[in-house]
Structures are given as structure tokens and as C-alpha cells.
Image (cartoon, rainbow, N blue to C red; front, side, top):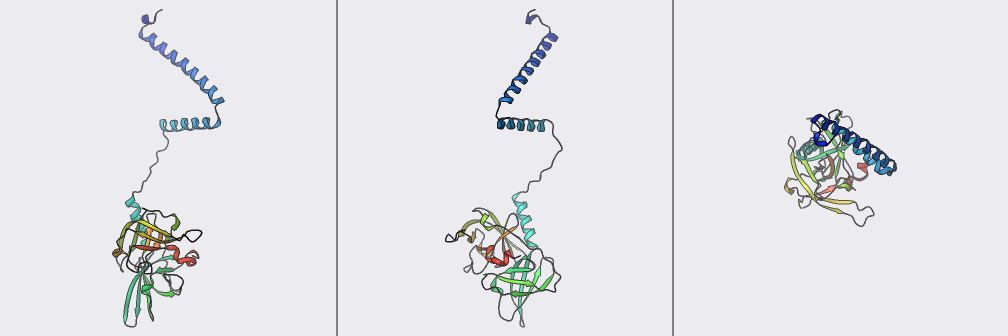
Length: 259
């Protein structure tokens, strides 16, 4: 019987037969090749088959939340804001000056030394609308001013998350959170210069320069990454002429790592 004499049903059956025989032959050849193939090739093929099956027969639907850069920025600001402290220096004549700082562990607060002076008492105002008396902790070797919340205070303020300064990269987005009591001053920029001590073996970071407007920088405010980690602090010793350069958080030295 010639092929052209076959009816539709016979043509379909013939096609199925050819496909069946071809599939068996393909399977035999594939098994033979798989047995001879290197282990690495076999594993790769198995992974491709598994991925193909997963796509053809999808399992449980999983929802994936992707945070945008703006979401990360908002989350970072919210996180560090809980640890901010508005510091007020007073004397018998009244309030002398105001500053800002942040809790970085065990009730210890870091701020700028410009708020210090003779015969002054210090009060810390926290984000949860509470306040407490602060005592200045002498640490001449550290360029920042350190304060401790009074021992009899029941106020518990979360500490900021400390980031790895050595992992900072040029172009990385950062934000500084400062402001006066009851207000926040948010300034966003990117890191455009990182100065390291090339004379030291580990080349530690000496300063971090950003594109943040110098006029928006408040002494004592933290420099925060999008992951909500504090990597720097604005100090008058590093900003004598009001530049946009921050001291790395590592200037807190042994006090930082003792927390």
C-alpha cells in the first residue's frame, strides 16, 4: 500500500507509530550517553530537567517582596530614629546649647564635643517622648563626646546597628539623620571619597566624604547606610570648616567594641 493511498486515520496511526519508535530510540541513546558522560555533565542535565519540571508543574505559589531604594531609605531612617537623642546642656543661667547624639550600646550615647563645657548638666530627649539626665563620660582619646543615661533611669532605648566601615564603596547611598528637639533633619547623598591610612597594615578608614550639603549636617548625627547601619558620625573635629566629611564610626574605638 502506498502512502498516498492512506486515509486520515491511517496517517495519524502511522505518525504515532513513528513518534513512539523515535521516542524509544531517543531514550535508549540518551541512557547510553548518560552512562558514559562525566559526573559534572550528568548533574547539569539533571538540574535542567528538574527546573523544567518545576516550570511545567508549578508548586506552591510564593510571593516575593522586593524593596525599592526608597523603601530601604525610609526603613533605615525609621530604624536609626529610634536611637536618636536630643542633648540639652544647661547651667544655672538656663539652656546653653543643644546637640544630637545616638545610643550605640548599653545606654552609652555618642555626640559631638561642642556641647561640652564647665558646670553644665545634660539632659537627653528620646524619640519616645521621654527624657533622662545624662552624665558626661570622660574619654579624651576619643574625638566624640560620650554620655551615659543615669543609672536609676528605667528608660530603655535601642542601640543603633553598627556597620562595617571597611565594606563601604564609592557611590554608595547614605543618609544622615539630625535636627533639633521634636524635629528631624534628613539629608541624602552618596559617598564620593574614602580616605584610608596607608601607613597602617590594615589601611583603616580615616574619613568618609559625601555629596550631602554641608549646611544640612548636624554635629553628632549618624551617617547611615540603606541597610540601616551606622558607619559614621558628624564631628566638629572632622568638619572644622563645615564640610561634608564624616568620621568613621570606628573612632569610638574600644568603647564601641566593648558594647
